[in-house]
Every structure is written in C-alpha cells, then in structure tokens.
Length: 293
Image (cartoon, rainbow, N blue to C red; front, side, top):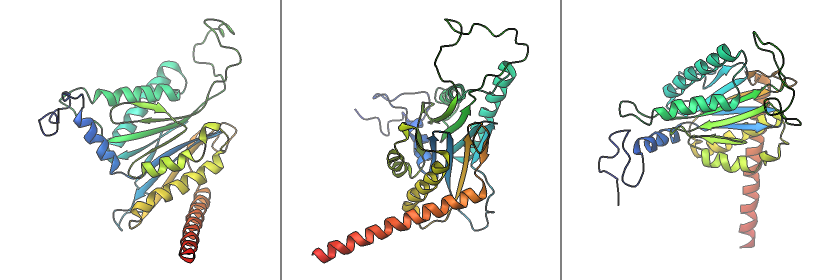
C-alpha cells in the first residue's frame, strides 16, 4: 500500500495508512538544506560549531549569529529554517527563566531538552499548525556544586530514600539534539544539516564515549569536522561560528560563551592543515597506484 500523493500530506494531524506523518518528514527535508551544525561533548565541557554559508557578498562578517545563549550555562544551535530556530531559542529562554523563578536555580540539561522537545512535538499534533523545520542542538554544563535556594529551611537527609545517593556524581556536561518530530536524545557527538552524514562519520572516529577528549582539542576537532563536511559545497564560501561551555574550573567558568577569536583562528588553521594533509596523502596514493600500473 502506498500513501504517496493520496492526500495524506495535506494536514499535520493525519497519519497515512502505513503510519507516516508526511508533514514531519517534509520538515526533516528542510533541515537537510541547512548548514552543517555539530556538538561535541568533551571531558571538561561542550563545543558547538556551525557552518554559515555566505549567501551574499553584502553580508557583514560576524553578524547574523546562529548560536544563542539560553541561560548562563546553556547554548543552542540550529539547522534548517532560521526563523523557526529563533522562535525555539525564545521558547527555550522562557523555559529556563520559568525554572529559575520556580526553583531558584539553573534548569538542568535534561529538563530543558524535555521541555523544548515537548513543545516541538505539540506542533505535530494539530492541523492548525505546522512542524518546525529545524533541528536544534542544546549544550550546557550542570553545576556540580550544591547551592541553597531562597527560603530554604534545613538541608534534608544526607542519604536514603528521600535524600542523596552516596558515591554518585552529579552535574557535568550535557548535549542533546531535538528533531522536528520532538524526539530528543542525549549524545556524545551530534550532527545535523546538509553535511550531517560526513560529520557523523568524523565524530565516530573520535571515540567520544571514552571521555578523554579535552575541551581545547574538541574545539580544533569541531573546526576540522565542519571543514570536512563543507567539502561537498566547497564552491560556496562559509563562515565558521563556534561556542563552548566548560566546568567552573575551565576557561569559561561554567558559562556559555563564544570561542575567543585567537582560539577560533588557531582552530581554523588546524583544520586547514588537516585538510591539506589529507589532500597530500590522496595525491601520494594516486601517484603510487599509477607507478604500479
């Protein structure tokens, strides 16, 4: 049974006979037309990077930011329809502010991903709205230190069923990706956009699950991966935008910030050297094969 062209893609609230929601699938196609965006979870922080295609020579370099701060310790990046991404940034900021008002502390990584994911999923349920044509990547650092809240009385039990679990580490880096369907997962390395397949292949080579990659090296690897993913569109100019968030002992002191200009420039030089090295290896391999023939 086929459902292509039978009218099941005319509304967002109707499934096709084979269980597909075409409007959500079309939204995912819009994401594939956006620039490549990646996130890397490191041992001591998280890095975000995005490939901003230069569509006009009149655009001002450094303007039109694609990475946004949600809270002091959170950043968000998106790929797809840029206005949709800005709307989700506004929504995420509202959720973070609401959490601070109610609980007197920053919102955890998982809770922000859940709230934004639930909001995105609600736009796949009704015929009066359309899905968001954007995939977002959330990065943050949950504080490992305990902080008292306003009006707190006592400290509660130290351990037990209503207290803490002994020998359990809390806080640390977090990286989540939210898809147009509202589905979200926690990742060690996430990629979306036009070059997502190439970027995923490069991320898998880093063995991020071992938790040994440091933040400074993660910045360089993120720049290299964006340059590798851009090879499929190398006839177009692009601008690299990056941000990071570290532990309270790291370079950002637990805050989400843009990568400093000197660190960004060094990362781009590293990426270009890596690309030139790959080209030299390909040339040498090709030459050797010709000699054997």
